[in-house]
Length: 304
Ligand code: GLU
Image (cartoon, rainbow, N blue to C red):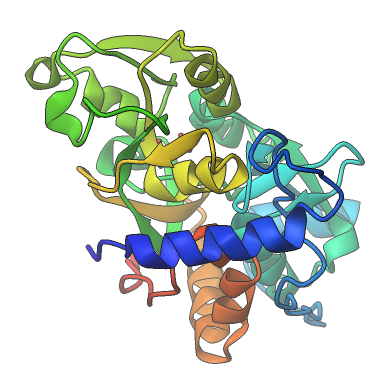
């Protein structure tokens, strides 16, 4: 896995601060920054819904019959899956969702996003309460016993978010006796509970709650994927920083019903075509790219 450059982070954070804090007088970092990237953000691609789509998938057939596709997502991950106070969703995961939905024949206004946090993803997908799930969802064999995955469309790695003035935590080896917050049902929480880290875990249901505890000095660090943590750090650059030493690999997939192979294949084809036609990079640069990590090609699709 490629590690990202801290210089690029600094430049992007400066750019973000410059574009997003126009109205704030001398309070840079105290107010969260605009996760949609502000007015000068690069343009998002547009997606045209395919016509006469014929996919032999029970999920697609049901969604067609009701005229909408329900997609599970996060709502508190800036630059990835974020919902503002007007209910507008933004972020790289939201764009990936729109891209694949278009190829299944659904325009952006035919998507209903539903917030589903990490701890309830598998049950929500298996019950059919969402048709697809796009939300920093690591593909792994344990989860594949319950759900299906297309992708990966991105590679992240677990890292640590700490307060800006923290000097004692410089890698995952420095967590002995430290209070580390993460969320229920996530792979980084599972990892950090291993005895070798010696950390005391605080287990909540939303990352934004962990970040608040970090700012309030209630915990020493937050762990989850670097991509998520960089979003929080970019929003509050004077208060928070990412340690920058990823200690796991987290390939992101699109979750769906376990045995719907036709849907899995169609979505893998869709991801492949948007990577080729440049939509993918364009979407990345206008969302997650703003939090400091330059675009890199995703790993090869894992078709099965
Ligand atoms: N990618 C990790 C996972 O799927 C952490 C992020 C999340 O909780 O969504 O568990």
